[in-house]
Length: 219
Ligand code: DX5
Ligand code: ZN
Image (tube, rainbow, N blue to C red; front, side, top):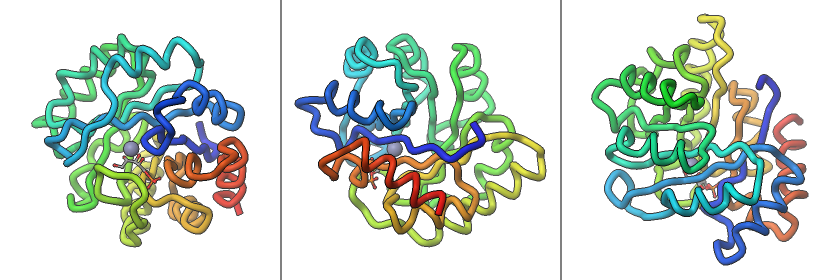
């Protein structure tokens, strides 16, 4: 996965018509970002295992599950069984990231590690070449529709440097405040997997919004 991709975040979707919303974005991308929040690690609640199970029946999209929970190890297996393809945990939420990485690998799923904007980027660097995806949060996790934090650009660049030096092909994801204006800048900094909630589901034609965002990202 070396090209740039857009992963719509269903946090901004109309949950009353979730299957239709997913079908619409599936016309423009293969990746779907699913935010799991527990009301502890972040001050909000969102989707649980039954939601993932349910939407799995209606789409072949690649499910990228972003676990914003204090105890991610308890949830790898349930979400894997429910149909997740990629499981991303936060570096702040585990005692030993290597143990968490290994736990996801044992389930045969792709593994991602994420970092909160308040955590020094050095915390994630030792794991960049060991995972499939590094998710650099560009807003404080918990809510959609926030402004992109400018300091994220340097953080993405630091991750890119380590990955390139290691000769790894780890994907660099960025999540929060991605729009037509920020997309090309995060790509220039080194990201190649752009999560977008409001920039996709906030527009009437979701598939067109994904295509437009990708075109901007590559401009
Ligand atoms: C925030 C979530 C994001 C969120 C992004 O905690 O992790 O995935 O949906 O929303 P936007 O794209 O609206 O900033
Ligand atoms: Zn997310």
